[in-house]
Image (cartoon, rainbow, N blue to C red; front, side, top):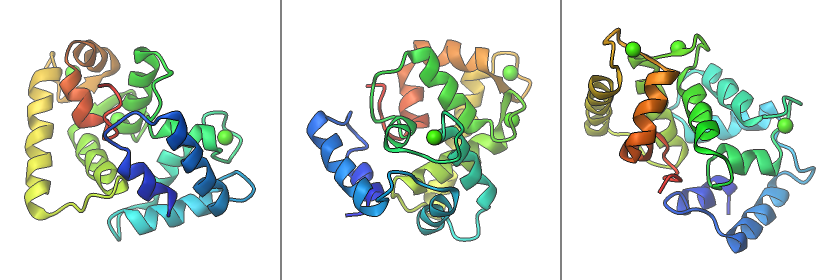
Amino acid sequence: MFIFEILTECKHSIVKKREIKKLYKSFIFEFPDGQIKPVDFRQIYKKYFISGSSLEFADHIFDLFDQNQDGYIDFTELIQGLSVTDRETPENKLRWLFNIYDTDHDGMISKAEMYKVVQSLLIMVGSMVKQKEQNYIKEAVETMFSVIDKDQNELLSFDEFKKHCLNDTSTIRVLDTSHSFE
Ligand SMILES: [Ca+2]
Ligand SMILES: [Ca+2]
Ligand SMILES: [Ca+2]
């Protein structure tokens, strides 16, 4: 089974040791040298993301996964990147999550960025996004901004984001599709 399909299956729970072994087997089967290259990642992206959506986003996600910046995603980085383990501190996790949403790296999350990323992540974990859900995402983004954006400048700073997420884990459940904060 394709590794992203397995990850979709376990997206609602933190992956157990036994499941990690299973994931590792599929990972090695698909990537025998233990590394995902940017070109592989683009192919995964094309298969799982909306057709016609920008490949820049694939490269952005690739960079975030490639924590040691060696140009490859190894198994550990993949698992950590998909937030299916709970080893990291909340602060690190939030920073990672924040960086996913801040696609232009300007230190702020705009509504457009949040909308685009929520949509892309839903598709990455295997949900089809239908028109009805697109409206739902738009509403969810509006609601999130009305609560999180304290100074109402239509942008979320890391500070606003962190303060809110540490107090309200339901936001994390929406933003982090792996539900790993439960
Ligand atoms: Ca790496
Ligand atoms: Ca930004
Ligand atoms: Ca703000």
